[in-house]
Image (cartoon, rainbow over all chains, first blue to last red; front, top):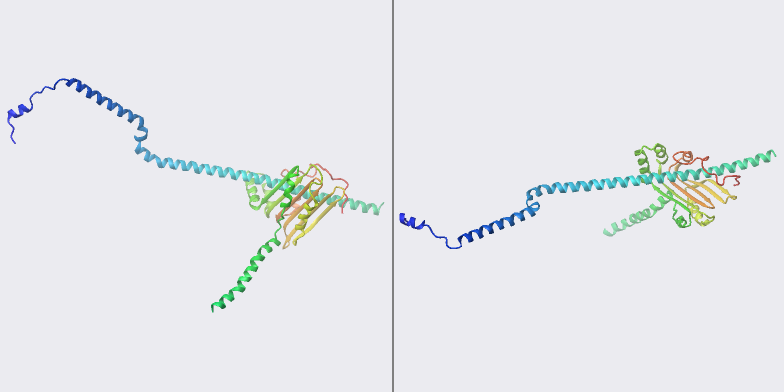
Length: 129
Length: 196
């Protein structure tokens, strides 16, 4: 292929853009600006969701571990509380059981002692009226 | 040949079955625990009910809890309940006399008439319409259980202690850890005893 100087001059000659070129240009500029504004708006609105995707991947195990730890601590706390409650109940019931047992035991002993006393009083009266 | 083997198995199986059937009976004979469920119906009539069931684990838990709280009575209670398997208390206080039937008490006495139990104290007070009894179950020279039965017109108390306990030590607990002593306690009916 060979191009002569005249061919090149012909190809690169000035051309008239035609009527309405300015309007068309301005319209295109406006459209491009609108598009870029809309996309930037979407970007800003949803950025917390899709922008830190990489970060989210790294944070997920940390969050799971945190939740598991909090759950475990909660269960441990609950078990501790339950143990304390049952311990307190056991202590109260043991003391009450011992209290009733001792009181009744001594009540019986007192009755026996009193009856023996009465009997010995009677016999001493019989011996020494 | 096979038939002979089968025949040899039968006496063993039969013996095993008999032993299996006798096993609960042997346990029952040495069990110092009384069945007090027949008294539960009195809860509705009573003004005050103290129904306590403390098994071995609960007793140990109580001691542990007292020790952890640095309770000064912990050592005393621990010493007292170390040989115990259970404490069962049924105490009913009524606002009117004769709210329980003699049959309720007889049910307990029937159980206490079983082999192993022996009555060590009996006090019948006709004047106060009161029956006081203490039973002990002995196993190999050791106390395996105690039963205290106090039947007053307005109060019925059954205490069943399963395990080894020293009654003198228990009696000496009065005045300690909130147990009122004889002088502190209101003496409701004690005067001019006349009993057996």
